Length: 175
Image 1 (cartoon, rainbow, N blue to C red):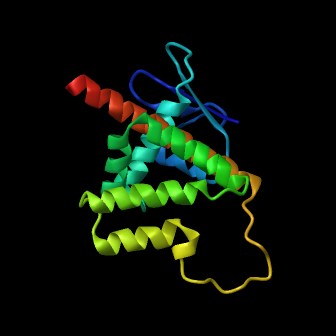
Image 2: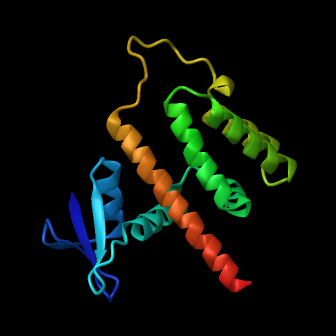
């Protein structure tokens, strides 16, 4: 477990390595399957979710594969979308196809609303839903996610959930 302290001056200090770390550094740790805990130095509060949300938003601004229209649709749909997505991913891991149905419906809604063009809609369907994807070449080994893959996906969903909840809260404050 990597323990990081956040100071009032917004600096992040990696206590295990005894050096300062950036959001990019935290992102690299998480991408390598490492467990990270971020503690507010003043209050002692665990702020891991908030920092991971910042990491996710920073990644979004630089090179995320999700288009703005998809993220906007998720935020506009509200908290139920994120919790439904979390349930759907859990179902998919245990063998269900509920994730495909939810993703396809959301993409169709965005397409119908004019937030996704025809090409982007088709591309997202191919990327996110297996039955739309081109038939892959048979490999000798089955493609089964590792425990690290599942943990990393879960952490990314939690970070996205936190980011969306924060954005929704900010949106409500600005009304």
